[in-house]
Amino acid sequence: MTAQHDAGDPDHEPSAHAGVTEDILTGRTLWVILVLAAIAGALAGFVGGAFRWLLEHTDRWRGDVVDWSHGHSAWGWLIPIAVSAVAAAGAAAIARWQPLSAGSGIQHVEAVDRGESDPPPLSVVPARFVGGLLSVGVAGMVLGREGPTVHMAAAIGAAAGRFAHRAQDEIRLLQTVLSGTGLAVAFNAPISAVFFIFEEVTKTFRLREAIVTMVAVAIGVGASRLVLGNEPDFTHVGSVATPSLTTLPIFAVFGLVVGLLGVVYNKLILACLDGFDRIRRVPAIVKAGLIGAAVGALLFAEPVVVGGGDGLADLILAGQRFALPVVILYVAVRFIAGPVSYAAGTPGGIFAPILALGALMGLIAGRVTEVVVPGLHTDLTIAFALVGMSTLFASIVRAPFTGLVLVIEMTAVTTVTIPMLMSGAMAVVVASLMRSQPIYDALRVRMLRKQVVPEHPPSTT
Image (cartoon, rainbow, N blue to C red; front, side):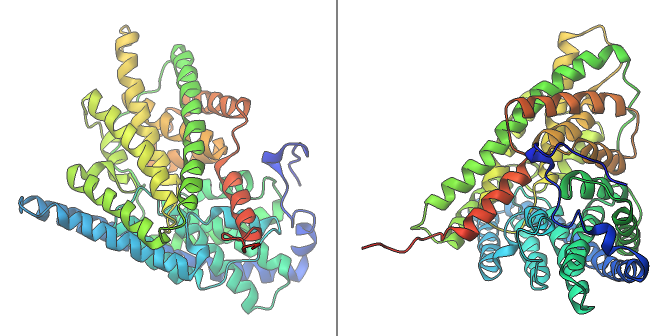
């Protein structure tokens, strides 16, 4: 059972193991893979759950440090700057020790699935665990927890295959399947993880592979819930009435605008990475420390504007009212701070900052709609925030169904599904027409190119 894609579309390149998966998962082999996936899923669930639990406590500690620093006006502002700088530099040092721990890790998962890179070693797990706590938690950089969690789970899956002396194709399969478990654990969103595997990583659907994914995700999320509890990520979402069908043109226009902004965001990420690579005289650890210092200054000025963005998105979805100029400022700061933070080369993902940024864009759209279309009798502010989250995700990642299901699972709100579909479709159309490469495809190509071409070519003199 296979979903066929246009072989000429680079966005839908089949994985390297696509042609052999049916042969791998037959008879006794299927049961062996299922057992390995279940064991690895449980371990990934506990590791990912512990990582997220520590991040939550680190976020609160970071807030306490900022509050304390405000009570020491003469020199207190230096404390968040110093803490963030040291933490970011430490995370960069870990990435220097284990280069695969830098950035998101999802692009490496995809490269492994396509046979373009070797499965991640188990050393990725401690590197991403500690490095992620430093960069996302202590430093407060505009990065997400999902990148490290996905890559740690993938490394655990690959290690399970190697430990059981499985064939290389089976090891790749286990790392791919477990990467979905990592996403599910990061957001407590098991269904979106299945979409993530087939829409983003493998670009194809195969029934037996889906069964292995379902088992690993079920066990992994179950294990993580023993650590974190069983609540959606956003538990204080305000009442969201079903938008009238007459508002669909508004959401379509919103999708076009967000799609364009997503294209710009992708280009900015790549431009920041290239720009920082050109600054060769400054060591990577120093560059990361300087970015961390800038984040620390923002943290002192306005804590909600940095970090992964969960707290900010939670306030928006709970109905918190922000002045429109403040929201525009938040969008501008996070739009730049996200790519700059990613360019630092510390462990951290892109998903969570995208969701928060999309919610902010939706907040602006809701306010503008209130002025431009005053006859509406329904407050669409929170609806626009939800649609903004899934739409920006669709534009940047080019996985619209993953983003839609992810937002639904994180909020337990289904009343804006139709606007999400309309807006997400328009965003993908815009990104495709502008020939914007999906961000993880672009990052994967860039990663593979850097592995082939030495960063400092030997002198010919």
